Amino acid sequence: MSSIMMRIGVLCAVLGFGTIILEQFDYEFRILSWASDMQPLFGIVLGLVGLALIGGSVALGRAKKAPQQAPVQSPQQPGRPG
Image (cartoon, rainbow, N blue to C red):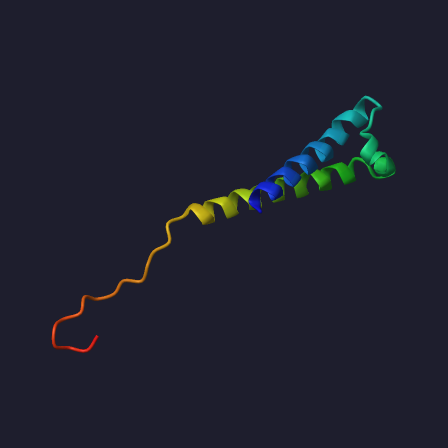
């Protein structure tokens, strides 16, 4: 799940921040040509959404790799119910 989230985040960040740069040279991504009237705000928002997805993916990956602590059980003594 986090791998897909990371890929989508990178794509959104590249497209979002890329539209801001390309707009300065009067170019645009064809896939985002419908949003040319909403630039640069749309590019900034899309880039930030991409960064948020990347951050969420990294956080999920770290949470999965964190060692799970098993509950500590006291050793049973002979003759006593446990």
